[in-house]
Length: 184
Image 1 (tube, one colour):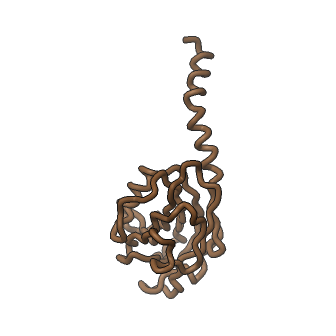
Image 2 (cartoon, helix red, strand yellow):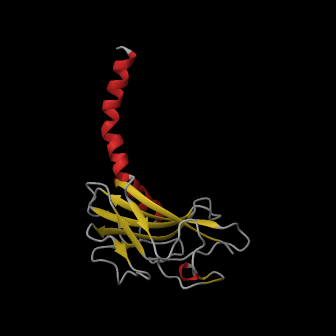
Image 3 (cartoon, helix red, strand yellow):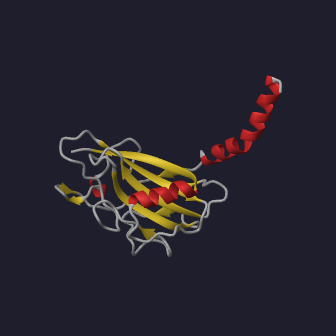
């Protein structure tokens, strides 16, 4: 096959993937409580382990999910935690497709019907705010909204971050992320 035909065939095979990637790139998340690249407010800091914050889940809004999205999930993860595996601060999954925002202080009681909070690395099925070790450089807190190809993940409130991460990556159509910082 001449090189020019190979390029045409390759581009035609990649075209659907390029389109999906472009559409997924339109998916965005914003928060009135977390400014991208800025220090987290005391309201989003943990209460315990030497930290004295409000321990409130942040407000979130997301827009322009990829076509085919059937549900959402939300994760808050610190890849800089000195654990060898990061730290899961919050997870919510099986969020109905009609939901595109959550208010500040969302709890299991105030989640949309059917949504589930998974277990954080503090050992609770709840939001657990930032609380890096004293003296560490500022940690990154990656808040991600996942657009999923399934209505529900087969998990409950005891699901670990690792199990949820596996299921999210297996069913993700796209994700929108913002990162806040916190150190002490």
